[in-house]
Image (cartoon, rainbow, N blue to C red):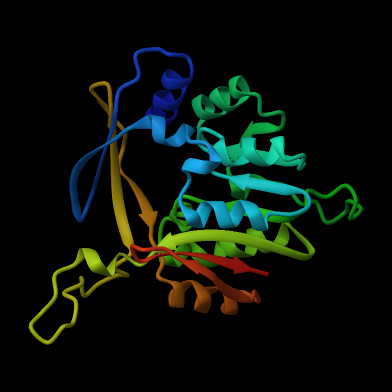
Length: 241
């Protein structure tokens, strides 16, 4: 992995001639993303993210923290926050921004040793997966594996706050009003390609889940699912518990 997304984040943090990140998917053309957006303050965040941060409680895990803006806000509010990302460059930027508890880690690699006492296990009261948090699942088939891992990291009475979008609107409609989606696979399964400073990352899978599909997956894995808020553009925030 070239870690180009993380490199863009670190370049912005260190003022090392940052450029726009170019993203392209299987259903959309190349699009420039201004990395400065990842460094936004609370007042500049979308309402779904604001709501998630307002609902956060207790000991918090921020999964796929990126530039660390969500975790930083919560840390400044006095919460105990652990922020993880698979990008070493992004984590370096988070450290430079003042985040105290950050680490390069894949969610699936967090250990919960059954032999340890409950006090020593890595458990959380709130787990955040924001900015299309379902993306890290990759495919619909992998969703249960991730939900089971998330469930194993929850304290009693705790919550997972996750957002995504129903991207059905990106497909053409037939005359009868139905959407012309691929016959094979789930329409929210995309392949992303990221380019930065004349380098291109290996394509990777990224999952957008409509709310009903997330709810069904949650129930299948012994979790309740509640729709918290809907955005203006087919996006939503959900709470799993």
